[in-house]
Length: 629
Ligand SMILES: *[C@@H]1O[C@H](CO)[C@@H](O)[C@H](O)[C@H]1NC(C)=O
Ligand SMILES: *[C@@H]1O[C@H](CO)[C@@H](O)[C@H](O)[C@H]1NC(C)=O
Ligand SMILES: *[C@@H]1O[C@H](CO)[C@@H](O)[C@H](O)[C@H]1NC(C)=O
Ligand SMILES: *[C@@H]1O[C@H](CO)[C@@H](O)[C@H](O)[C@H]1NC(C)=O
Ligand SMILES: *[C@@H]1O[C@H](CO)[C@@H](O)[C@H](O)[C@H]1NC(C)=O
Ligand SMILES: *[C@@H]1O[C@H](CO)[C@@H](O)[C@H](O)[C@H]1NC(C)=O
Ligand SMILES: *[C@@H]1O[C@H](CO)[C@@H](O)[C@H](O)[C@H]1NC(C)=O
Ligand SMILES: *[C@@H]1O[C@H](CO)[C@@H](O)[C@H](O)[C@H]1NC(C)=O
Ligand SMILES: *[C@@H]1O[C@H](CO)[C@@H](O)[C@H](O)[C@H]1NC(C)=O
Ligand SMILES: *[C@@H]1O[C@H](CO)[C@@H](O)[C@H](O)[C@H]1NC(C)=O
Ligand SMILES: *[C@@H]1O[C@H](CO)[C@@H](O)[C@H](O)[C@H]1NC(C)=O
Ligand SMILES: *[C@@H]1O[C@H](CO)[C@@H](O)[C@H](O)[C@H]1NC(C)=O
Image 1 (tube, rainbow, N blue to C red):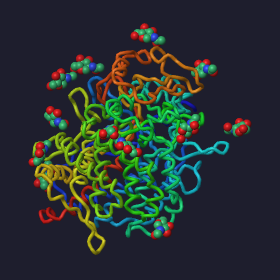
Image 2 (image 1 turned 135 degrees about the horizontal axis):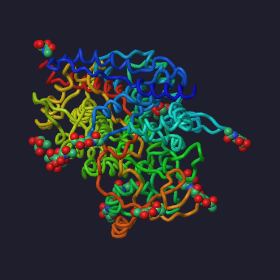
Image 3 (image 1 turned 120 degrees about the vertical axis):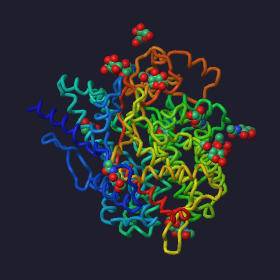
Image 4 (image 1 turned 90 degrees about the vertical axis):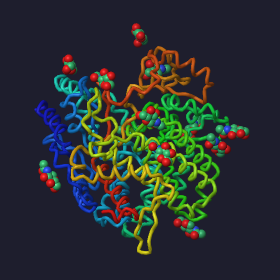
């Protein structure tokens, strides 16, 4: 009986992820905006969990939270010759996940469409999705503080902790799984599945600033939207009214390398430190220098087996920081002066400015080429990053006259400049052309050994175009509340040409019929370079016992490996020549696809569809091209 159970789960893993079709349809046909939007709308509905489903071993069924849009945890499995079999595994084998993050982006994209007049929002479905999202609020926090967690929480002895139902159940199952089944997983390149029972503790994630800030951004848009009914607004504000409490937490847990009074906040993940050492060592050592971190927790106040930072040390991620900025910009542009004065105090202003400068450094130094894996620790797709920044640029440019404060204007100008220069250069420089001269983008899924299966082409093209359009257009609302996009009058011809030729790719009939997979986000361990073989000056177990950082075995669950403060450059160069955890540091980026390492990533066709809808809605609203179609 037990063996049948394993086999059923195994089959379920294989089958539950069916999304795309193999068939190549007639691709010479162009669709109107309206037809393509209609088509995407239908596909998106198919990605929604319309009813609650509980986890069951037999007949096998995964947990699905009603109202959420789906995403699946896949493994980036690859073999030496990049064979078709592994393409099928990447595309079709995955574990469904119920997180708030994906749904947040889908709802935000639907709001874009409603504002641009291309769809009507189904209020009942929207409300159900918001109900689901609100359940992800960190229940350890006082009522009304919008601190959110990626997964739903369970309670043990009065403490709430993250509990990813499907992953936990799969991990429990693997504990008792016979070796022959584990061998199949290993053969399939899903070796991390077979150690899920050992890494199950890594699932006890603290709440994070990423989920929290996108919730704030969405909520503020909802409150201001004429397309959302009052009952939804009331619910949102009831759960999230204490913004000040939230920003206190962000200040408290920010990274402060020059604050010697607290070793928890002046210590950084060794990987982040490595990627940003050159930048950090240029700073003036002012004690109040601070950057938004990912986890709303510090090493000091973890709760064993319940609330733990993976690797026990906080980090920063440029994509997460961009989302932090987006949440804050929405707050600052939509609050009265009293609220702004209350929240945006001197400390938060410093945190905001210092964090923005990290983003500017990342864009201007093209870190997306040298170390995207570490600079965007949780986002394998670099186009995520460019779009996350671009939507700040669009928001600020569209509301420039409403900007309540000189510092925000300085930030708006600086982000604008970087995205219109280095950001745009990166996006234009990475286009590919099909035989008809239409442009597209691709990243890495399915690309290895000079072969590609075009797995992330549609998603990458959607995200890169959203980034370009958000960088170069502003929104104007007419007297009927309908929004239009308008190009900056200084937009260069190569930008408008690129957008137009990219849109042609997406307006093909079959453009969303092939793969809609993506690596929208991931855990932090996702390439050879994201394993912690980097110099450190903090090296002890959680219980305080020190270990030798050069020779010890890595034990991610129990060790703290970090960099305290900022290390002098000569010294750091010396340290890079030493061994860490008995291995030589690999300094250059080795790529995301590899036959030697397989890691989990989250793919969500719902993101490809909804972001595609948002993009087409923006594009069709651009006045001066409307007449062409
Ligand atoms: C593809 O569609 C075009 C336009 O509708 C049509 O002319 C052509 O015959 C079709 N080709 C195939 C192979 O179906
Ligand atoms: C990969 O392809 C090469 C050349 O076709 C072949 O010699 C080799 O055996 C293949 N490797 C595997 C693991 O199948
Ligand atoms: C809850 O706390 C009590 C007393 O502190 C302890 O005996 C018990 O084991 C705890 N239960 C769990 C599930 O941790
Ligand atoms: C250090 O600061 C963090 C974040 O404010 C806090 O959680 C922790 O308790 C502090 N540690 C000490 C020893 O004061
Ligand atoms: C460091 O301080 C000096 C003197 O105040 C100033 O000129 C310089 O711009 C500062 N550098 C940074 C990176 O803030
Ligand atoms: C400012 O906004 C807050 C929150 O919306 C509100 O409670 C307060 O009354 C407003 N103050 C003024 C002066 O408008
Ligand atoms: C960091 O913020 C402080 C204000 O808290 C400011 O004086 C300093 O110039 C900022 N430095 C950078 C590099 O952003
Ligand atoms: C642009 O592409 C060219 C050729 O592929 C490359 O040499 C150059 O470094 C790229 N520049 C940027 C900023 O990406
Ligand atoms: C891939 O293509 C490059 C350049 O064409 C070539 O140098 C390399 O040997 C090829 N790699 C494989 C594994 O075929
Ligand atoms: C696009 O055009 C601008 C202005 O004409 C030019 O400065 C820039 O180099 C061009 N960019 C690319 C990637 O071709
Ligand atoms: C601290 O933890 C490590 C690893 O779990 C263990 O080897 C060591 O003995 C512990 N030290 C003390 C003093 O408990
Ligand atoms: C360190 O690596 C060397 C080979 O590079 C190996 O011989 C040695 O056993 C390793 N030490 C430990 C403690 O793993």
